[in-house]
Image 1 (tube, rainbow, N blue to C red):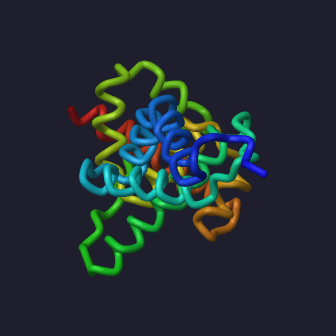
Image 2 (cartoon, rainbow, N blue to C red):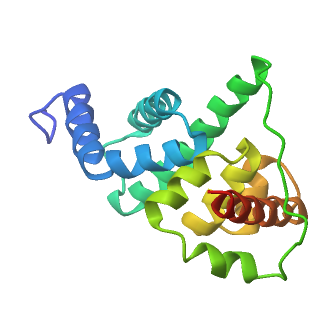
Length: 176
């Protein structure tokens, strides 16, 4: 008995991965770049995402889950790259907060007035943990619970990192 597909499984996987990459590659790279703020690390993390995706691909892969699954892999791959970076002993830039802290919610509203390209530049200047928490929450729409699970911290710490990121973005914007 022959298989239902005339293509060998390896070739089928490559074709499927190429198709998924064409649809989602730019989005995944963009997420990795936002999380890592480093072009080379983002490229490497993106490759890692699609390699891991390829390993999990089966003939019964449900395409409706693809984008969510790729997003989760991208977050994990980016965090792994950040941990490698931390292991090399690189000095982290301290988080500088403004002297006057705006009331809750005010920072988020003020950030909407920043031009998107400027905001991307400012996000890249945030310290790693604050940048990751901010991007996952305010850009990707992830829940505090999900972010806390990815970072291995409490939800309260997650909210503190997000708040600190917003304040730092405002400070950076006003110092331009």
